[in-house]
Amino acid sequence: MPTIRSLLAHPEERRPSPPAPRADLFRVFGAGVGMFAVGLVVSLILLLTGSGSTETTAICGAGMVLGGLGLLWARHRR
Image 1 (spheres, helix red, strand yellow):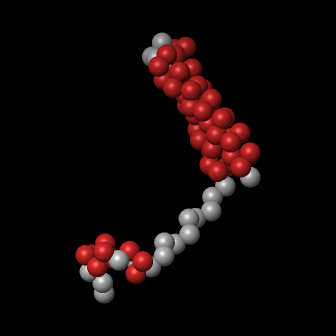
Image 2 (tube, rainbow, N blue to C red):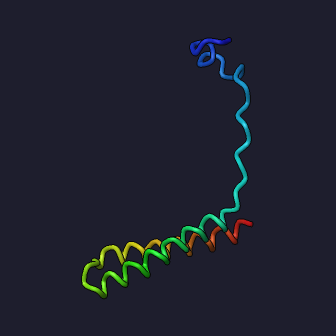
Image 3 (cartoon, one colour):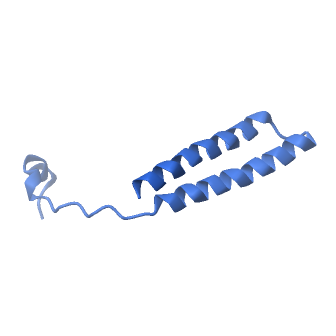
């Protein structure tokens, strides 16, 4: 077994890194946008009943907008 010092001195002796796992980013971003949409509905209900805050509603709205941009990016990269 090689020592850390020998691996640092000779990095070509290391095993190659495994390939990155494949993921469907469109589904990942879609799930995130869906969760932010649920959070937006809940925060709007809480805001209308008087126990919520505008910050949480704004955060959920911003998450949906950024997630929508992520969906566009993921569709473009397919």
